Image (cartoon, rainbow, N blue to C red):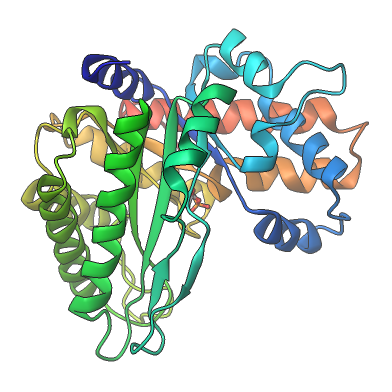
Length: 334
Ligand code: 13P
């Protein structure tokens, strides 16, 4: 795989009107989601749930790729077809979450650092062999009193840069994700400043580590007031603030930006993307890489009757994919 192949895959990930479905919850995180809807979390229920999502008819119409967890990359449909093969057949690029989650950053109570660099070169080699074409690493930036520290931002973006360089060495497109959390009562201006600082630090680190930006994708959080801020922002304010922040900090060489939903409702995640798309043209295609905002309706339905609601749950996945695909084009109507 040469560097131009990486660029081609990155462009495919943000093809017009298409986005990513994030189904890469670790077994610990998916257990939390299953607990909320009363499903036992076993290897087979996780497999069955991911089969429902990934075999949604015509999913490839609006979905260019899916981010999987290690376990899912190795699993198959009940009829024995490897998920990865089913995805390639449906025109959906397999992606893999390669970070190992967050732990407390020593010396900075309340702040987090993402782990998973040790042994990553070998793991990436295996993932490429299993069919993965892109990878994801999520860094988490928390806003609070005197937070985030510069040390937290720089430690996380340094890790993102080392991960991205290893991905490109292995021939896999890195999706770099510095998520600024919505938790807290901070205002939208604070989120703007923190997001801008994190993105500037990220692109400085990627430059320093010789990462080929054309063969990478940014997974960004939107610029939003904290969940508990008294003054919430309307859709256009969020769209304008997010775009202003991205323009200031993300080089035009980046082939695409996809957003995480981060706890927004399905409808708000779609409305915000739609508003941003309508404010174009932009230096990069914008699209989605939603986890909860793609899955929550389907999970609720499927949990009520895994067999009887299988198709109905898939229809909600297809519907969310279609709506977000329209939003990526600025053509969504509420
Ligand atoms: P949400 O859209 O649920 O935030 O998940 C996206 C994701 O992959 C976060 O890493």
